[in-house]
Image (cartoon, one colour):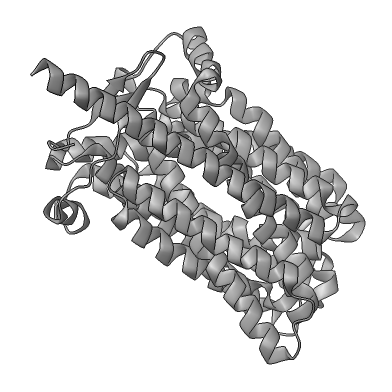
Length: 457
């Protein structure tokens, strides 16, 4: 793509944006090092910082759920219901986000995270289940609104500084996911400090109000800060006006996406992204970290995971400039997590304490790089491949991702760890093969168009 402008190729049955061009270093540096005081850049950092504050509280709490709310398997069941609710609600989420606009969708979406933390102050079936159901609904709005907001801001910024849209989308997603992954560092370090203080018995976390209340109240303070920051986002009404459409037509177009080859070939990767997140949040913390290092060190291990995820996200965003680089980053993520899955599957014993530390922290760090690769590149692909269906595309991601996450939490009590690892080992290569087929289809479409242009000239 010599002119590096955003273009589309119309095939016999669908339209596929061409994203195979690589951008010169000079243009990439315009994005990474620009001193522009663009409102879109300000919005990017405001949104990213808001999510950092909110999710440092939620993610740290989630990482502890299956380990510390283990009575009656309350933690795992709550998370399973949460992600099942998120799956169902994501089907209809694009429409209210289209009505509300991305900013108001984000603000409403944050309310469920408040309720979930409040429920953890008094964990029981009567508090956690309703909170999980409501969080599933609001989270569906939040993530569809986030994906739409980031993509819209990135495209506007690309117009301002005159670079290819895919470069700007990749860079914006890299910055956002770097902030987002950093929540694992801060939130889990807070958990580590309090749980290591010796004031709480790791087996009775949920019942020790003396120490959990200060931790959860601190988390609520972080959520207040994140919500206040989100209020200062621009509404991007100019973009919303350009995308208004009839509600029924919009919902039909969202469902009709499932007939497109692009989304069908991406589905295995969307599913795997949910499986791998459920594995690190649930199985890894409960069945690997806790037996070897103890529940008090979950925070430390997940902080290392978050640091790798944050650094990997920033680097992946800067390197993402076209289909070739996106593909390489996704393949890198797949190979990274394949190594960890085989490593855990073959590991019979972690040996000494020092060996346990090295192995588990190493696994967490490598897994974090893989998670960064998938999050940044899936976001970039959806924003680039579906320019007129942003809400629907991100809803599809959350539908399939959260369905897979919910499945893992629900089958935890009835399957072995080895069986769940085999499931991931089965899905990972399938997702990479399907993505490779999508990549081949896009390249083939581009070649056909180039041949057509050559013949006409």
